[in-house]
Image 1: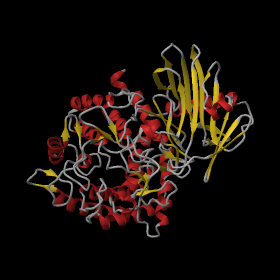
Image 2: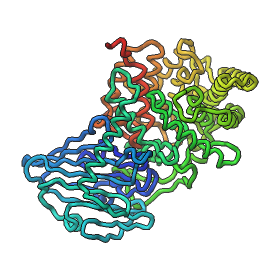
Image 3: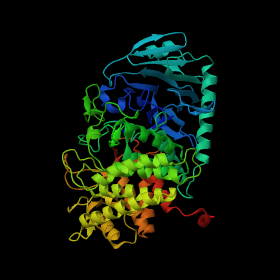
Length: 594
């Protein structure tokens, strides 16, 4: 039965998910939002006839899996019941070459016998049109070609081509290399190429990690989260995907199945903010260019909540028939109709993501007057819509309200614009945005505070709560010592917390009542506890959340509060952000620890 104990490899151009037995079960090529050539993650067990890349060990007993230290290189060790074992090393090459980053559409798999004489079968069965069709296959002396309408893959190997084509079992008595990528000839020894690529890739990631501004505590968790967030960026355009998968359901009922392989401006802000706090700013610079280009395509600088990773594209939502769904829980959706929604918080999300560009002297292209003027046009939209109904942070499909979080993010847009104007010495613009921010703040407070509930509420003049209210202090809308914030956190505790976990909301929505906890909401709660001085509670809960990660340190979108299951798309950037942000807030300082 499928589960989310999956390893992630990638290179900021594509990614692959590999299960605990070394099967490549999900891989979209040539990029994150493409047709998945490997897709058994979304097939029930009895329909898994194609869509995988498998190293099958005879008489399999058990497996172990780890990442090479501080890298995105994954190692899986398979053991059989006779004491034989084989090691599989998987990675997507990424390293600097000729003054730029080399990130080919290539998956390298190195197989090595560790003990005894393991007997293996190599099964390479890509598919296309979301699992509904098989490619045409041709072969040569050292390669196999898989021909699909929009993609041709070539496997180059020093293994027996016949053994792969016919899926015959053989004894692994030496190291073998499998290089799957574009339809191009490999003009050197595949063994030498794989070793050189792996060394260079490990060196790249080791160097990248070495310059992270890590907290003293929980460094392993933070490093794995940081690498995962970096792997979620599509470097060619600057987009950041919310997750690598589509249609992993939010719970076992399987109706909340969405495609997250796109760039949500809201999610991307939190990723950018986190990477900036870790001291790696290149992703932010690239992302700002993506947003500016995406906004300019609209003609009026209005923003959609979600974009394709090329900055546009057809995201119209549809169901596909070739895949049966995760554990058979369909439908499998491609595209996301959230692109048509009004989600007013996106204006604040973009400006909050960009503000560091004006204050960080390390950047190659610091914020300019021109960028400020572009952001001002977004601020004008924010000021115009902050008190208008939208679908909100939770993307309600059939109802709209004037959501407090959306209004606060619009206020944040105006507030940060006045800060940028002050930094640039633009006194008239500073006064302009300060006045607008003050007016917005006053109106939001009037309509989002509920005297009867003694709490901020999720929508203007409403009486319900949602977990985004935990962010009011983090966003600077109120201070952490404001009695209203403390009262709101206590109200969220009383109503949204079930066991150790915080739900995004508990009232029924378009699909009924939520069954599982939205992972990042518990991290927001942990940060709120710390802001209120309840650090001991926050640390204890954070330690518990770390136990809910997979064996490789990853998290999905949702957690089952009554068991150990992870649900929802995977790995979820929101959730990985929560790990980093809480660790940095809660860790003892280096000075204290040393």
